[in-house]
Image (tube, rainbow over all chains, first blue to last red):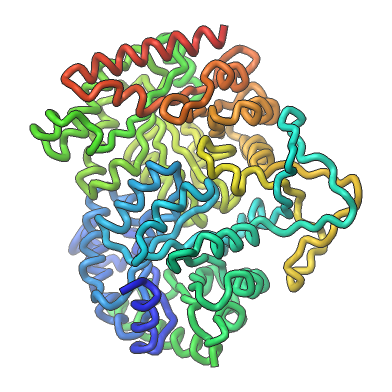
Amino acid sequence: MGFLDKLCAIAHRNNSWLCIGLDSELSKIPAFLRERHGAHAVLEFNKAIIEATSDLVCAYKPNLAFYEMLGPVGLEILYKTRELIPTEIPVIGDAKRGDIENTARAYAKALFEYYRFDAATVNPLMGFDSVAPFLEYSDKCAFLLVRTSNPGARDFQELNCLPPHPFPSPSEGRGGSRGEGEEGKPLYQYVAEKAREWNTRKNVGVVVGATAPDELAIVRRIVGDEMPILVPGVGAQAGDLAQAIKNSVNSYKELAIINVSRSVIFASHGEDFAQAAREAAIALREAINRARA
Amino acid sequence: MGFLDKLCAIAHRNNSWLCIGLDSELSKIPAFLRERHGAHAVLEFNKAIIEATSDLVCAYKPNLAFYEMLGPVGLEILYKTRELIPTEIPVIGDAKRGDIENTARAYAKALFEYYRFDAATVNPLMGFDSVAPFLEYSDKCAFLLVRTSNPGARDFQELNCLPPHPFPSPSEGRGGSRGEGEEGKPLYQYVAEKAREWNTRKNVGVVVGATAPDELAIVRRIVGDEMPILVPGVGAQAGDLAQAIKNSVNSYKELAIINVSRSVIFASHGEDFAQAAREAAIALREAINRARA
């Protein structure tokens, strides 16, 4: 079963387009768990969060950074976390990798074969050959960073671009002057167009932050109805949930995966953390479904 | 001691601007080592390569992908590899990470605190707040991807860009038309300018591929004399070594770190692999020094 089939099956069953980000940073985990389990508190924490929320989500998304910072033991915890997630729920490895082809192939192997993630986020800055090894896995999905949710997204992703001139003069180091009436568009739109172009196996997705609702609508127009958009930036990053959802769903009000991490998993730092995460997830699922309706 | 001091000290002592990339992919390691040690062959291999070449280099650069693909044991091997490298030789963790601020902080912690790398490569697509956590380590160095060595570099890094219009119309999804005479420049030059701007602690470097010699010269002009340029793409990727060096060194013929991975470490697949790597490294060091002269 391909990624999209798996995603839609669970989204319908759980009536949910909520993805919970397992950004389980050790220092933010309830103290009583850390005292009892040390670094392995991360695994106990994830286990409780997954058990409390697996009927409420369409996916989970662990961000590898919070596991890597613990060294090899963190990666063992990541592996075991993946095993705890019911097989019918897709897991998106949020790794944002990108490298030359033979290296990207090693990253794809790590994410899709070792950790058996159903999807991975990929940084497209290095272009097609850095993305292609991920696309060779036709039953997986590569979510390309198109317009991210953070303030720095404006530094490069919104630069107004034209394709390179057909006969550039590299020694000048200039693109040359422009004729009147030539139109540019922001870098993120070029990336979205490439995502559509590279989607020959129907296994490409895009990432657009909820903090950029106008850009969400533009990207949905570019990529069409069949491509999933992963939407981070709700919750701790304060994106407008309802607007983000309206602008990112397709014509069938689907395929917008709304990711929330910290404001769900760290809803409480007490003994009731799992129940608090469940309540936060219920509220978010409802808010998402209201905005879709 | 800051990264640049450490780098220059060993470069002078070893009379070398050669960096060896420890891209030690298990399947490419001599069969006799794999038969004897299984996955731990990677560590035995690295140990032999380091012992055979540590008087010939200015740095080592392991690419994390080839360790991650083995799962947690690969990260243990990476940790132990780092411990095998003499402390006076800087180690560049080639990880190309980039994420929102709190996540980038976790990646920086992993690379600079857990693995104790002296430097790391960083993907700048997500902008300043994704790079800033790396820059808070004033004795380390963050090498930003500016113009990479692979064919896909042309997809986005060479797009001809202008800054966003001051009053954009996001609902149109267009940068608007341009007036005659406005000049653009390729994306990679914007990144190089930001690298210079963000270098307030003298701990920023840039990555420019040897396969793009004209761009190397342009980037050296943009970043000035004080910033190191990490130059991959010689060897297996067939960049022109002499031209790349001439174009990337500063006025003192220094601070161009020439990285070679596969064509050194896999120079032989037999019992003589370490000696063959040493001979390849000697030849490269000489070729680099000839081109600098």
